[in-house]
Image (cartoon, rainbow, N blue to C red; front, side, top):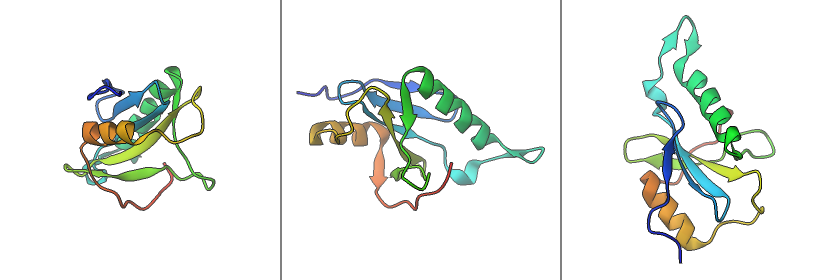
Length: 120
């Protein structure tokens, strides 16, 4: 039986990871795209995403990308944050069980399941 709540961790000031080590599957909550700020022509969210990916990699995890290199977005939270899939480098390629998915969806606050993929 899966725990009702899985641990979550802040990867930076904008991204929160909900990772299930037992299944090797997790979700990362990203900030709302419309809240991005440009500083000297550079996106604050892009810089934060790069840092979040480095933090994930240091833990043995990476965001899931499709064959075209697009991030695997599951949907959005009630606040409008985007939810991205993540996998452990050491995990099997099989999908997690339904209980794990429901627990992760609840932890992230996932409310919509239709987000167009994009590079990130």
